Length: 115
Length: 136
Image (cartoon, each protein chain N blue to C red):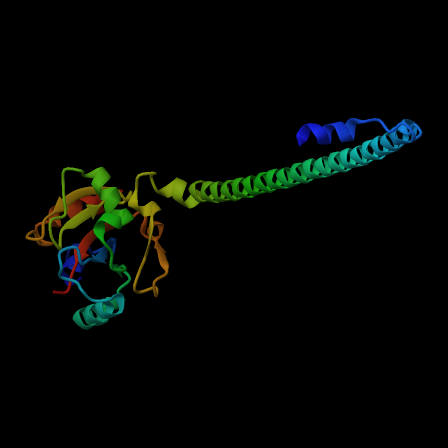
């Protein structure tokens, strides 16, 4: 969140987090996940620019289904894969788990500058 | 033995008066009574068959009307549902701000809102980063 805020000075970037056990790394319930994330983020959990969704299988998640239609050549192979979404709600870029927020900085700034 | 018996039976009794007429009358009475009974039974049979036909017809008609009513209910439900969806699609917020293929036209339950559906149209017009996360 801090890194995102360092890129986004206009408070226009929203982080949408989708917990999943598709890769056997999230066995907890929604309540357990929420507690862990609260412990991890502290006060940042209540940041309106961060939204934690319910745990789901990605293949059943309508948002990820939409991603597969828009970017069929890209596949989520593990946790912490990222989609950059433009202001119109259409995905514009895809990043693997090894790519950090700073690798995405230029693309995020481009989208933020787009009106 | 058979022949002698036959002879005995068939031998006309000369002293006895002719009794053919009363026998005939009895026969006709019997015939009349049997014919009237058969007529009665015919009438009863016809009435029963008519009643049975009526029963079957009314039963099938009631089933038919039930099916029609059921179809009508389903159709009405379908129309209501489609109208509801139409209203959703034609709501000015989504049509004006969000393209049809946008994820901002979708909803999904969140933890922060106690499992309530979150309309992503609330963040329409902003840039988003979507991440699939896990704690381990």
